[in-house]
Image 1 (cartoon, rainbow, N blue to C red):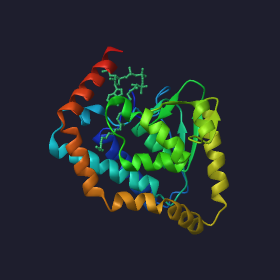
Image 2: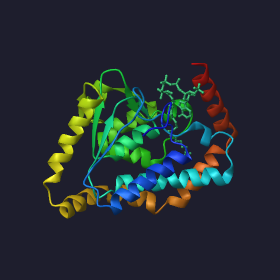
Image 3: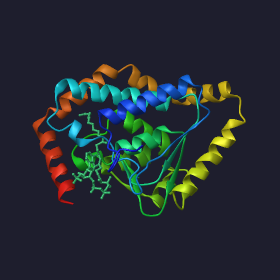
Image 4: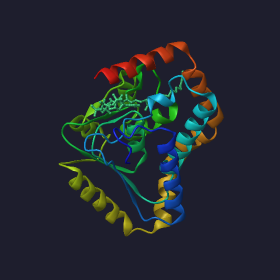
Length: 238
Ligand SMILES: CCCCCCCCCC/C=C/CC(=O)SCCNC(=O)CCNC(=O)[C@H](O)C(C)(C)COP(=O)(O)OP(=O)(O)OC[C@H]1O[C@@H](n2cnc3c(N)ncnc32)[C@H](O)[C@@H]1OP(=O)(O)O
């Protein structure tokens, strides 16, 4: 990802990510490493400006493109690794969680689904991804708190798989993971992957329109708009 300053996921970046994932699948990609050009941020998550005082049609397109991107990434037949070389809150954490393996550069960055802290709610499929990675108990604790994990904490709870000392080390560890996968029969590998992920995928696939409506209704609430405005001001003041 290369959208300075913080790879916030606006409609344009999501379209680019989705189209890339579609292309990779078509071209029978052997493996993908998702990382960031930024030296300190993997992705700041959804672009708050897409939710603040939104145009209804654009907000709908934004959300359905996010759903498409997640479905493509989560169900990709080829192996995927996140080389998390910076902070990874909310939607950034979702991208990492949707890969099969996570290597994160330590020690100073943080990762987690922090939505509760902002007065917004992580959608059920964000929650499902966290639950699938760290288990029901730890996911409930993390999501209700909107906890951002340090790299050590993330490793301990199973949110990431390995710690790297810098980006080059993260990429090298990600390549090791992909090398290990490359010797396996591709169809068997991808069938097992999708079997593990099917229930989570189907939950969104069967409820896409309801999920979109919930998002549009939620961001139309004055209280939510107030919370987003205050949050943007805090970020700008910083
Ligand atoms: C009842 C049931 C309802 C269910 C349905 C609910 C549906 C709601 C969906 C909600 C889902 C949301 C998921 C999300 O992803 S929300 C976004 C959450 N993201 C964050 O909280 C991250 C915020 N950013 C940071 O913490 C930091 O920026 C950083 C990533 C740690 C980086 O810090 P750093 O110091 O390097 O950079 P700055 O903070 O100075 O930021 C640089 C500029 O970038 C702007 N910025 C940062 N983050 C965002 C963002 N997410 N969107 C838009 N813009 C962002 C920041 O304001 C600075 O701008 P400036 O240069 O103009 O000041």
